[in-house]
Image (cartoon, rainbow, N blue to C red; front, side):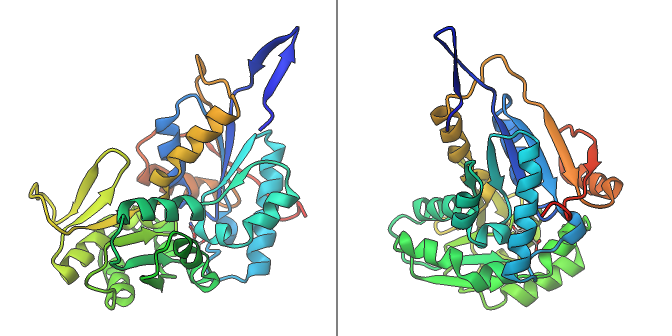
Length: 308
Ligand code: DGL
């Protein structure tokens, strides 16, 4: 990262501005955590909700949408791109990195590394929940295998993201979808990896279902603590919990590294934020406000489809 400029032999650093990209609402689960944890970081968020969901589309189409998104984000003068979409991260990040001369991260490496740290020496199953495209690519599976994790159960959950996109995060439809997708999850599962960034919005019904199915507590793994998700109101320490892990936690160290290695200025700076979507900004904003507690800028409409 080349961000140190020299003026009169004095070194000074530029502020950091990170771009976040997802097919829609999902990446906001990562964005909001970064905004909270790194107040000096400025951000630009793009949700391509006009073309969401990506998860049922082909590699060619997803790659082309992702390239258009990155082109648009580069026009916003960002110095780093975080593809906070499991599906877009599963099209070749390497080819995007060689095409765009800017640091780009996806969510696969960080999440799989985090899973290996949580799993330690255990050989119990790791479940990967993601979109159909992500599962088809086997990218999470092969990255987990790089960490010597081989007991992997994968499931495509194509209905979850469109429900979340419409502001539905619990209730009978989500419960039915949990039954449909999770009924054959191994009872000994140790980690459930939320490999789609929309899924953190539905951790409650997912964890309720897992508890009902396995009779084991379900905890959300954070960097500094575990949050008990199910059974609700239980302070009881449990011997063999199931851990849910998500990209907003695993991305933390990557952002820290970027700030440190890029020598970005972070002192005495307050980050500014811009949100863009590609259709119906009022609706997008309404759903975003329903999900997130943090103050939001007005969502702006942008057309990225003609960029390439
Ligand atoms: N948030 C996305 C992901 O992480 C997307 C879902 C979709 O567009 O299908 O995969």
